[in-house]
Length: 521
Image (cartoon, rainbow, N blue to C red; front, side, top):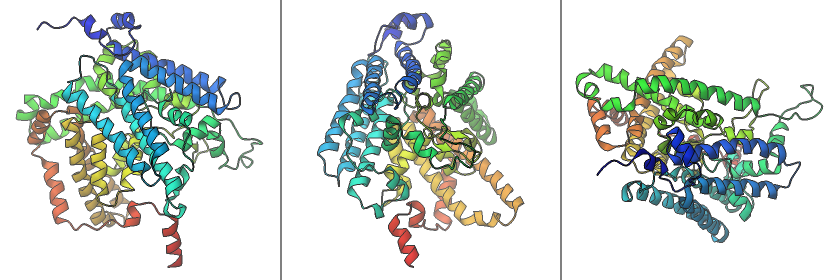
């Protein structure tokens, strides 16, 4: 069969076709142009929302309605009839929210949302083979799934559990009344996060809509001691500009490193059959490091969408269709005035409530746990709150499995997360058995940090390679060429080093009951 002409390929989308001429001009697939156009408009709409629909000028219902209507429009513009999946899931889960008993509301919402998402993943990839059209709607569906389950658990905490049985964080985030339909759809479908995320807490979002978001956090500081006679008004402009700089640097690194060391090179004959083990180890690390700027760029991308429109070659190289399912950005939320987290230790306003990564902590991580906690922060937080802190057995294993299911059904995801289970357990065992020997002097502690940093970076490179390779054959080829060394080492550590059981209160946050019991003891 003859290859389809480029013009017909770029025209394939379920979303709006009004930007097809621009798609043809730039040489970018139409679904990607639609996505960029929506996010660019969302950025301007966010500034307008903060300035002209501020809580002091209009009611919460108007703010809810505006955020929801524009969010629905963006989804339909980008995904067309595929957006029905989002609306169906939201309506079904609101029905559960209204009709289900408080004792089961979180279970029903979780299984329905995750089940629907998984069915969509399977049908899109394995049944329809991406279908006739190129549009990938899984990204927004993944974000909505996080929000549905987050809210369901927080409603259950607020209405179905005693306050004494909640941790301090669960108590703070617990929702004491079921949301109205307008609040529910606004939280799930608002224009600031429907396309690119991130997941956030319902109480934080409602506080933002009602104008209590920054005020509450500012009250935690004694401003009179600082010479202020009234509460200051934090501006997100500095935070947005900072993310602009991060995006520019990431873009520069992407255009240099990522193109020089592509992930596909890990399947080359030179790497698999000719290079020695040490060379493979170092080259794998370099390739995985070179792949990071793509995600750094993506997760701060909203600020730079206008620049991306001028770089068609970049858009194609980024693989926008697949990245759209992973994009989680907080710049649009900051521009709207959402994301203020308080005042840092230096007295500066902080806008990282919705931030999704901490590059410095990622690159200097001395443990697998530290690395994971600072990469895709909002998803890691969601996994902790709905799974790790709540399941009674095998929390690490079940959390990794849930993460794999949420990401999709590519085999590479499961290689990564199953390997991650072994590495996490082994790293935890080594840390508990040996770390205390290196705390007696500063020199020993520095040496320990250097060794664990190197081990962590190499372990992460080995573990996440299948995630970006996706398929079974290149993953097995890579691991064979590496002699499955990290799998073997991790298994030996787990089997032969003494495993000190993790204390119950180390894994689960302390509740008021546990605190009171300690005081009585």
